[in-house]
Length: 496
Image (cartoon, rainbow, N blue to C red; front, side, top):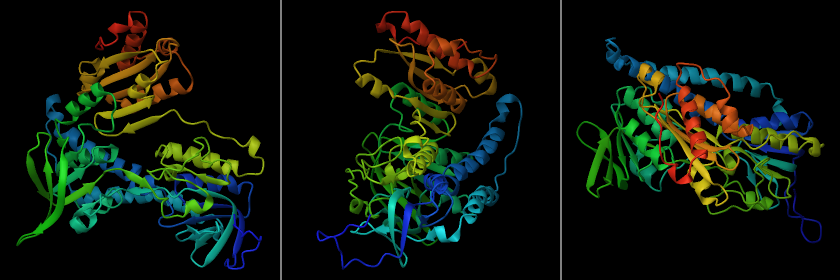
């Protein structure tokens, strides 16, 4: 990708130290998949990585957070067992909790590290890459010319301007919270998305005094107002939440004993208040690591949110170029299974027989928040459906507040909405807060992916008594509303 001058010769250009068919920048989920696929055809390939050679999911994301949640569930089940006539005393060893999180995290990471160690040393470069004005990759003391480049540089936690300096060592993100050697006594969590909700609830269940802040009166990015309100209702029983609050200032103050963090904020009623405690966990989302890479020197244009324009959502290819941007780096759908598929597809595309490359189809939109009750979104969101004048829809509903098995298990708080298309009898999407949502979400995602109708779904057996029977109730409600005047779509049926 070396750009020459108009005369065809660039005498000022530094000397290229290596020429390769494919260069992969970033060794997370997407980058590793791309490297493995492309390596099946290309021997002259290199992968460049700055930081840990595992994945965001294993190192600082999915796995350590679920390990923390697992400990929290054990504590919560023991503490809340009295209603079943089972009385228990819970003693939480914070140091042991956090040590297990790291030990098990490192166990999972060891498998990835072993795979990476098996790659040839001359194909791995540990360093920060930059693409210069000639379109060459600068890393350490090397200058690499690549015929095709796959960018998989991932993402990093977003921190509001000035907060790092103001909060100093009291600020935490998902990148370092799991390195705490003990559970703190108090913590503020800023941001009620997936990361904020999961960690806030887990720490609360482990005895930490947690206060959750969010600028809007929404949790988990829910776009269906009824599901959002139900989620807030279900979660507020154990979580201290200041939703719709505006943070005006953060900082630290020191007294004779110790340093504490503070947050000055206005609550939803406009009243000025202050929170004080040990740590502030910033969970205000993640941003792709692409701005400083120099992708503009490859002809890549970014929008105002640093997302690449002219991006193929199937392969990550940028227009007609030989550049691919995959995984969290493209900020398309920053989820592991999407990053995995994009990396696989890009790695296939750079092979010689591009036309016959196996390209995984775009995944049905699907997200899970592993709080309790769980939150799931599948397929199209309600606003997306409402904005499409061609989609006449109904909303099938079921409450889990009195659903049989949910009540038996003592997890009976939740609501499921299924959005059905009246013209096709197909499922457009769904949103849910409730028990077993991760499994119900998978079933609905499979139904959408395989183009199953509501009738097809209802022809499937639902075993009794299971929480999944609630899914059948919602599907029956969809079917019922398909057959009655559209204006009655808001009527709801509870599961028996």
